[in-house]
Image (cartoon, rainbow, N blue to C red; front, side):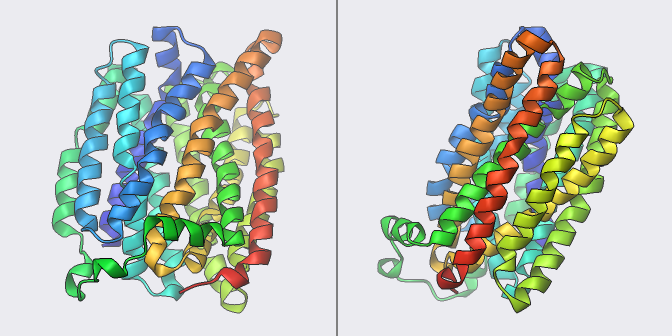
Length: 405
């Protein structure tokens, strides 16, 4: 079951992230600014991805989660292929809205199924495995996007990665298990209302800190780093195919060990003190800040790659403990809703506005510093790591009173 969810997650991130490595060819064809590219990678995707996540999560509390995932895969794959058919920048933006709408049906039902499949003491590791699908999908997005674009153009690359979604949707529907089908049906009158779930979550102070920390985390991981391929091409003058292959491989080399390490460390530390679910993420976030600042300061490509690998490891150490902390404090009857609310704010503010902010900073700095402006924009926007680390530390201090089975 986890393997099928892994494939779904990988497909999601492949279709989502491939656009980052295509930004320079798209900019050259449509003659748009970095702010508009930030809108393409961020808000156009995140708006429906975030807003539809909550109703999808409420649906996942009681409906067949296999069907939700299968429909979601089919929708985002079709919209990714439509991105490749766009004849102007507006059409491309509209199709990206559709990709976000489809992918809103991924994380809440997937997390909900994982918590049904695995006992409490294995969840962080299972969530780490599922999170690793994002790394694999992102790496494939960089590598396939770069190579297919070099050979056939950016439109063909988008169509090629979107088309296989129909097969994956069928696999998800056929092979996934729905544990609820073997349980006595709940009385609909006993289900917690959406408003009641929101009230409970709003009263959990550690949950509020986790939401804030995740927003800041997404600001840098989906905002600052969304322009890393453009930075390598524009500032360090590395060719597209090398960027896709080398930087994509580095993302995997750093991210996969980080996810595994984050899951193992948080499972081990939290056996003695649950607060380390928050604190493991906080410490890793804090250390990542100077690593990336140095990485984007150096003019040498090889040194940048080495520091990026270390930074990717540290950032991904944060992911499993944050997810495990979420499931410790949210309560079982509102699990999907808690995931959706968290990702509503993280995606809308972090993933949606992060690239726009980084792009606007780049446009502003470029007026004074030329292509070097993109370097300064990325370094400036990476300061979001500091409030993220602080909020996660505070969440750990407050979580004990919020723990709920």
